[in-house]
Image (tube, rainbow, N blue to C red):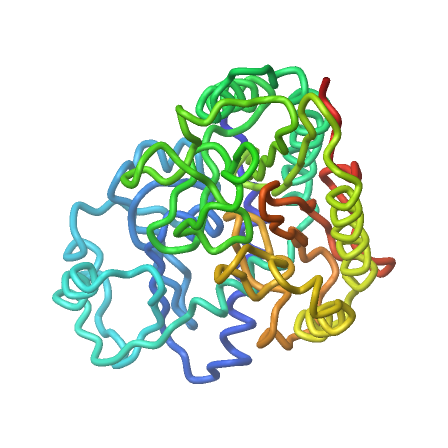
Length: 397
């Protein structure tokens, strides 16, 4: 199924990006984009190539693999084929001394190959400007995020309880969950901006598996298949009565994601004190959501919430032991982890139709990771959930 991004949508994105560049870098002349995520955002195709954006000329997407596919998928106005950067370079009579690049993405070997044919002397980052362009979603984008969110809600709140059975492994649950996700409409992969990061299906775990340290910058843990693949879930850890089940997963439709975490009590209810901590996490989520209004600062939201928590509750909050993350939520869209972040250092005010995953969680020794996560659209009335409102700790007999 090929859902084309309308030309009007692509044009608006380019206009916003160039406006941000004009404001923040008044002397800019040329930007080059190589990452497939940003190429898809601006051109509507995931083809490999190079998008050159010039301040005073029309933008050109030089497509290497595959031009035929790009023509079929994209409504971008100016697609041209290339076999190498040399093919593109010959059409540019001059190259500015300084260009703007995705420094978070472009490896040194690629930079060297590009500079061989585009002999600029210096480069600056445009990662922040790209992130700010993508941070405010159009109604067209929100449509797919809302579709992802409804699939997400249905799977985690209604269908996962039917998958859980005594004796199944974490890996069993991951495999069955992935099959269900794809059947329900998931695009088959969840993309992350974080360098060198992959999560196959979800961060999920039974009991204390959800407290295991991971290489992922998030509060939840994951035992994983092995040291080589610290994700998916263990083949050895089997579900038993009395277990907490923790499932944190991203789900995508037409490139756009929602993020949601749900917890379950299998076989017997968890102790009252554990359920009370879960309730507190939900209350924290709701307090954050009340502040997701245009004009509010992510940093102020973070500090307001953290200052309201007792020192005792802050222990093992947003992680476990020495592994505690310093945020309460994160932007989401074409990747699960986008800017801005609800954390210190993010001072620019929120704008309507930014989208955040809010995820207050707390590790409990001997039990696992409790908490909640849902995806919210910023509105004048606070965050609007697109992934449901269940408080978690669903009891499964």
